[in-house]
Image (cartoon, rainbow, N blue to C red; front, side, top):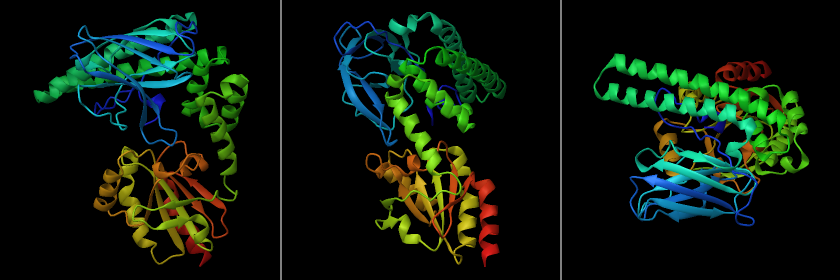
Amino acid sequence: MERKEMRKAAASLVLLSCLALFIGSGCSRSGRNVLKGEVKNAASGDRIVLAVAHPEGAGLVARDSAAIDTQGRFEIVTDVTDEYASLVYLEKDASFDPADTQCPSVFLEGYGELTLKGDAENWYYIEYAGGLYDHPDMQPVNEVTAGGKAIQKKGIALFRKGREMHDSIMQEKGRALLKESNALFDRADSLENIFRIAHPDMAYSAALLRYNYELMKNFDEYENAFATLSGRVQQTPAGRVIRDFIRNKKASETGQLAPGFEAVALDGRAVSLSGFKGKYVLLEFWGTWCGPCRAAVPGLVEFYRSMQDENLVMIGIACNEVNEDNLKKVVEAEHLDWIQLNDARSGAGQSIKKRYAVDGVPTCILISPEGKIVRRGHPADLLPEIKKIIDNEE
């Protein structure tokens, strides 16, 4: 799940929101960010782990951590800066899980100090203060976001209580509150865009642009927005991701030669795009964690079975998968019998998803026997068209 969608509560009540927080440029410890926190209902020895996103999408990577003392306090000192940092709560002796994305998140702008307050029994809803959180232009965002979180919290509690009591009216009231909170989060998105335009020399502006999928739909406008960011900001973690996306998007448009790749499939076989020259190749980008991807599975299975005798090779490319054992189980259970790759296995800079500038899943890309990109889009739209293309060549 991408970050701009993560703060909205889905009807399933899986909490996927990681709200941006801010740290000031005033530095209390040279070249470090300091996060001081107080946690209610915590046991001495519980820990807070500060983690960042894996560069190839394989969940989180732990960077720093701190134990909670007998007074429920902790302090993390880190050199992470100019990017999001997730804060994972772990009970004593619990292991860090790279797949744990249901956690609060802070955006570390420059170096400074941030104070946090939370409850071990509901860690997601931490409170924060200090640094850029007090930036005047962020006040409207902060107020709307806080309101959205408060309503979301009530909605989730009401829905869960209704589900436990088998009370459909209570559940519906919970859903209504969640819908109300999502509207506020949409409003916060709009206010963040105003902030981004006004502050092209802030790393947070690059992070906001990175997850602006509405603007991304108009590629020219997206590229122009990136050009307005300062040179320094374009070199921040989010800026580099955008730069690579723009480059790869141009290189993987319809009519371009398909970027080559080599990988090892889940069944151990070596796979190379160049090895399928002379055949149509359908790349199917998906994820076990993605509801729309799973909904598209029956159609893909039917399509594969109907096209097995045609001049076509299908390659599934699982994205952002942390647990490969779970991936293999899903592939087997749902009879995904075509070639299956785990993009998280890719080495640094080798992600197939990034090479093809795939900004959302499910996405399918058809490559011609000559190695050129013919079509790209959602499988529901693309599969009937692909069949016509291949049938017309026979």
